[in-house]
Length: 476
Ligand SMILES: *Cc1c(COP(=O)(O)O)cnc(C)c1O
Image 1 (tube, helix red, strand yellow):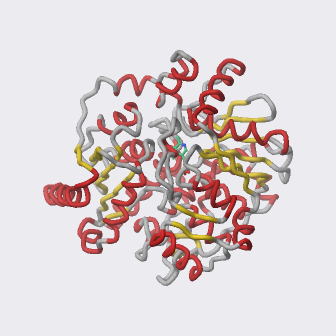
Image 2 (spheres, rainbow, N blue to C red):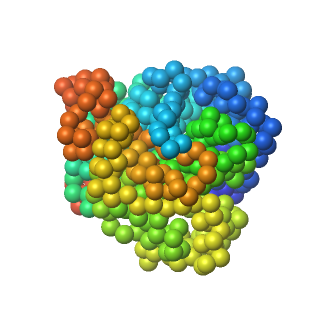
């Protein structure tokens, strides 16, 4: 059976179900598989032409053993999770000029890439919890899209209570309403005012809650943010799918350009490559929040203050999943990782050696996309290719365009949100909001009733647990 261990070592390895339900390892590390299954070119060849759910079943079966989730149950869970997507292909593609392609990851119920893994992961939670007769409280911090995806996936599930924390003013009104208009009694949206560092501040609240062993136990806390292994695992599938669709032949390189925030999506891509997927370059595209470009360029990993940009879902300065990437790049040296993590946490920065840098930057390129370039890229693709990008898709495409001349093989650009979630930026870019920038579900949410809690950053560390306890005791 494949076991999972903490990136910080020390704790004993656990099985898949334990790793998923815990969210975060007890010592604050992230769960990683103790070994990565390998995939051969023959297997890839055999997977060509599979539908998205069928391919997901093949790949997820490598990580989830039959004793934990029998194959027939896994199949049902996968089918239920992807049946909420509005496009028959689940994840369709759009061809751009220059051997570049857009992989549209936003056809799920809340119109962002977060739906791709969230539906499945929350269904998996529900499956395990019902079987055990247990309940969990999920704390979800969001930079705009994780919250809506978690809220939607939680509707009507008595096995979980889901608390969504979002930074007031730093996400779009469309994203807010996707959370506050959900009336399911187990879904609790919380606006936090005055977050200087956006969703990183809210990640801090969640880390503090997890670190409080009494509260963690009392509330049966867990997380479906991308610190949860199951999120990253499920996100590997679209790399396999995109690869099989665009590789000239199995074995030839396909490059990926990814708008990165917490590095969950790209971490999944890097693990797919480690499993044997013949990916060419992986382009880490970021906005003015450049911690990833900096660490991949210089080996210095630090936490600068957040800058607010037009691609707000990736206004993140603490890309947690980079630690998973480091774990595999540094060959599972958990002592080294623990030392680096402690330095990063206590000093706000850690320096890796040239040898370590060479190991973890291998196969990656980085590119920083300014707000001006987001607008320019959106405008030029609308005018010249009649295709509307959201600001995050524009980050990926701008990076792909930059590297196009020096790469061989197709470049797949991950489009992570529907443009209708960012109407103000679309208007700013092209002077208008065309039909492609609207969506019925968001129009409906505009006039629906809302409910939410509201706190201030300065007092949330006390106020939030008190409210969560009160709601929990009502539930009992
Ligand atoms: C979450 C998100 C990303 C970044 O994904 P990570 O896994 O956090 O790197 C990119 N674009 C959009 C629209 C997102 O919601």
